[in-house]
Image 1 (cartoon, one colour):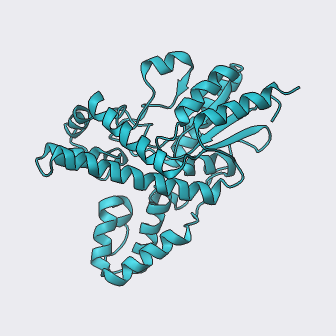
Image 2 (image 1 turned 90 degrees about the vertical axis):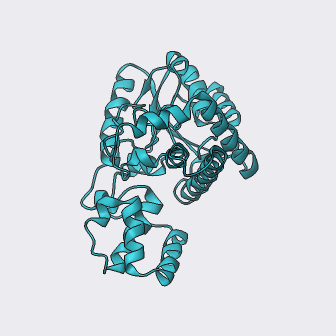
Length: 308
């Protein structure tokens, strides 16, 4: 791309350097940074979801970070409507919207609209089919109730086929099948002059970055953040309560595990999440521009824009 883009989309796994790339490109393009991460939308989770700091926000306008109360369940459709407004405002101000985050479904909905029936990757489908061979319907329903209480409430414990389908969908998309049902929206962005970037580090440096970042989160006050969240007395099934680190640190605060165990478990879950994010990106973002780190992505964009 050798012209100023209408929008820039930056995706990739957690701790890959997406925010760093967004900040650099916002400076180069006079951009507005718009959150495209489902967990960074929630208020009260600034540390554990790695939301931009106050100093970051002074460098460029930021939108849709920490705007949703943890007591609410933010839907894909809700984000899409909010993102459309933020994009329109940025463009109206002569700024380039730079959407950055790790929620692949947000980007898919942004470019393609939100379809009523999600496409589940084969490996996710296979995993839950295997689970259904070792667990009875009641066991599967209990698992669904723990991670998707809204859908579990709609299904009988004696209906294993629909329960497995619901488990597949929440695993693959991070969104309840109850939310998908009946949903349909048009794309917000067309394909013309939209720069689409995936930052995809190699596994070992990515995992090292995940571990180091969680250590910084602990130092920055993540435990107090979880303590304050728990004090709200929220339903465990709410999305904010499933942010990486919340359940593990909650177990530490309850005396159910040591701090070292909680930290190790949080890091493991974050690495697993990064793996799922990469699976999504390989499936749905194969035609995007891929880079091994934030620096190479920024350099490539700057070079392309400087060509005569």
